[in-house]
Length: 514
Image 1: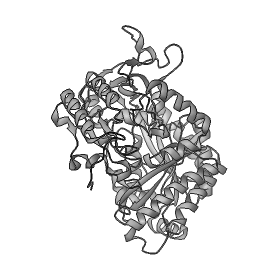
Image 2: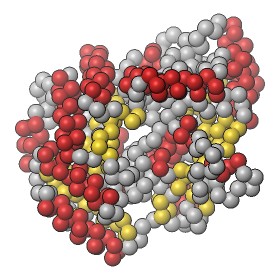
Image 3: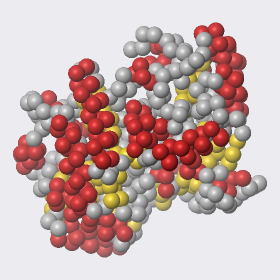
Image 4: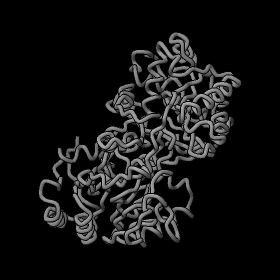
């Protein structure tokens, strides 16, 4: 709970009060929030850090591009930093809280229109506040044969934030940053730019052809603080004629590492469109509290995980995914997949064959790899006590790297008494995997919170030293992660920031860019 207000850096109470009056004249009194109880949702954290390090000075919620432009004029005048959120549910990466204290949260949830959906090309144009549930309802209402790429907790999060943060989905489209075309961006000076083909008057291909003419600038606005994206073109996945969810079990990490390479080859051959390799701890954390299965000190030992798996009739590691296509294609590709997994020692099974405890795992895999929406994955935060932080380095799709990254993460987690809970998601080209794990801890236990913070930071350093850097960082890790990418990239980002945002009012600290 917040107990003391903060001000924007270098601004007096009187100047801040004057700025608030100008903000209220733009959006109305009810959409400028400064009372501490109103700001709690904007500073509440799951990640292991003190909320005071991320406390906003206020929040403002515009409803249009015109209001954003006027807000920017006020912010430039008073040098008030704005931390932009779409729906503010970046769970496990910092939620809605700004990277540094004293920023004004620019909350774009009221801008929640689905501008259009092309029923032939399967493209959509959305505003920041649109959620996946809203988009699904639109597709159902208009009987459109499309799915969308999504994260696990999709109903309450939105496609714009998911895309701009380069989120990983589980459907055929996987990496969301591969599946958009065209942005509308408001720059710090209030000017509006439409990227790609969007600059052409009456353009017919803004959502169909992403590159436009000349340098492709869209990437400047992913994981960045160089502009405010107010419209985004999405590519929707055509609803498949059929699909079958599958899994292959492996007794140990060596088998799982072989599965990483097999999925790589099958993805590059076009046999599979998606795939993941994961430790059984993830499924356990979704359905049970840690205290109910282990009361000893330290991390749960490997031998105990093996015992839990044997008792449930499962394996410690599994590869899994969903095959999409026409029935004839699914049949052929499933046969190739089954033969391939069995050749490396996998126990192969499909959704038609599953029963017992494995059915829970299959239901979750089917939900996340298809168009089903569920909040089941939020149950994972009950495993230890409301604290959770995603940690996601990238590895090349090779067995030795899968083993090395896992051993590195497990060693650090065990050092601090935390369990490895995660696995690998195959990337769009098959050449890399997202080696995601979630650090789960009890936020209400001060000692455990401090230990989790130390572990969180050491994971970054240790994995980077081994050659596995993060592709996405929670707010407490943004500066550290940017430092790892080297001085040349930092200097380039600083030059871009100074050119596009000379007063540095847009989300200072985002991705380590001041």
